[in-house]
Image (cartoon, rainbow, N blue to C red; front, side):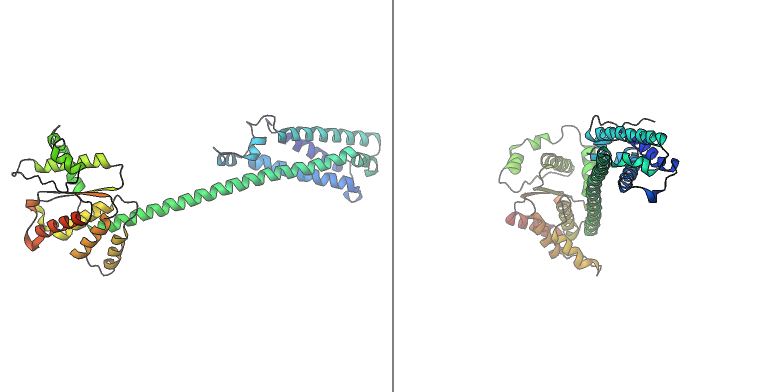
Length: 361
């Protein structure tokens, strides 16, 4: 088996040394203190190396956990590490232990195997230094493992926090979606897509390039009124303008865009409150968090299962408008907006009121 780290070699020699006392038939209670100290450090090192080999350098889960990040112990003992201090340390350790094993065997062969005959090997200065070296090596390996444990712990904590934040963010978005759907289920975006699909290539470019449109888009002109006979294509022109605004300002979070396609066939879903709620929803949807005005509106009515009044919707719309530096409001087929209940007149009043107070075009 390949042993790029040098760990197995040291484990093998350490095991051989530990087993010698059994082979010699020696009783540990008679062992000199130097021998006890040496074998204690040797046993500790063997245990540390065995655990390091099993749970670190040969553990794919551990290696994968440090994929793309630094591991102290793998950088010193891993397959890709070359000539590191740790590997040199283990190599020197193996050499010293092999010499120790040979010395013990030689002493045992020359005399009757006894602690008295072997104690010279343990009382020698070099052997005592070896015991101290074994202790330092254990500490070094434990320190490297501890550093990696701290690193992986910190990384795991960051991942947990990230997952927690992601979960909270997802729950927040789902909650926002539920509140906006509570506000209104009417979706003019689907109609916008249908109108763009129906449009012939080049349609509406004359309007986008006209001085009147450019003045409305870039200047101080707040209202652009485009009358026309039925069937003249005003709805397609409106869809073209909406598309142009979305394309031009999609990267600007301070520009709000909302639109309504009035239709005399949909009067039941285009009462004044429906229209105001739709404008409110469209302006709130792109914001990073749901405006407080809408949250409070939802809180006031959800338990009682009531709907916001026109005045509440109007006030919320004004507050949400302040989230933008400029807001575009496009209303198609205003003549098809119902007049019953003063719907059309009140819608115009709301629009003019927004223009008077805020930067609304």
